[in-house]
Image (cartoon, rainbow over all chains, first blue to last red; front, side):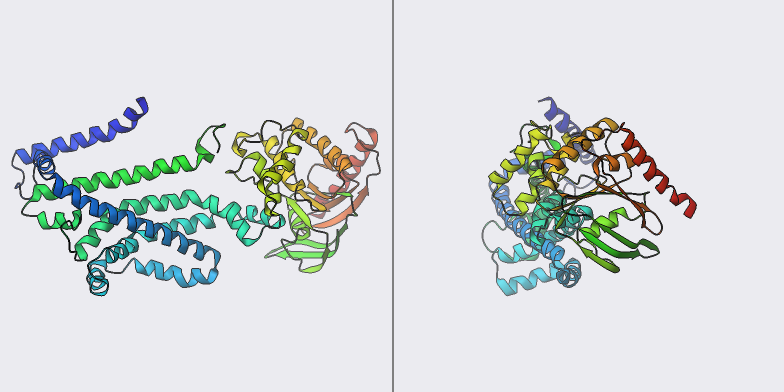
Length: 259
Length: 236
């Protein structure tokens, strides 16, 4: 209880202070309501459009979940290949870096022509945005193993695969998880970009679409949608941190509760 | 284990020059010398981790116990000790059972599930030694195994190692900078000097075991080795 207060109080106080300043600025007429609606108006928009916002959120959350899964798996696989095969490092790494310069809004349109209005083009966009941090951190983590450790394993007759399994893979996990956290944080904006650059059919095209439709005309609702994405990114990030703590008791936990 | 006229150079440094050494089956060969005399290179050559530039290395399969314990932090002490067995594809329960049998013998009973960071330096070194022993290789290359330990723990470990080798003889190449340790444990002591690393002399230690560090013969041999080591100063 005390720890929860210790962790939750500072961000809540900061958020309250920022919201208070924003409310004051908006109420005193600092900006047009269609440009910057006051927080109470945003809260009202959230409260009055539950179905619209949460149904669109469900679409977005699904895209994020699927896209991130794809990004984590592909990023990890690419990193392992780069680490194990020098040829793959030379061949794949530069292309992976280059992939980050692809102008996604342009390709988004092409992907729709190619694969239609379904979820697949969106997953491609999210994966393209999210897989890179996973690749870089995992490759670094795999390479950071003490060379003496690998020598020792060689004198114990460990095969390449065993050296990977016993030393490199576990040593790289914390770095890989850092990459996953970055991917998670950019995954939500990735979904937004995916939705706004690829056309969709269906009643609930996702929060990203909803926000762009609302901006400038139902601005408070657009802010309400943004607030939901904001909370979602935070929840994803700390959800992973929690899972991480559960999975790796080796460094942080006291003796006695090893699996 | 036999090295013949070994030479090994790194860019700018002649690490080893014309080094010839041998250790018969079950013999304990100690190698003493100042730092930088190529002792670690020597062990890596024996273990096949490096190739010599000149000369020939012939050895039965050798395992290295490095200066640092290099235990895997995410494994328990028991699993670290059993690492070689797991690499040899022994199923986990059998590997653990064989390693567990050694824990009591090394005074580590009750610490099987501890992670390396929870153990003292001496305990970690003992776990590393178990890992080396359980590799079942005929030649053990020990690189200053007790160098990082306090004097009391080191003395305990030395007498433990002497007993363990009497019961289960292995060919041992023990690299150390501690002349007393060399005389206490070895059948023969090779004295090296640095830049370039070469063997100056070999001293036979034909004393009965167990040896006491206060024994007059041990002290005399220690003096001989120390005098031989003095060569570094004159050469420079």
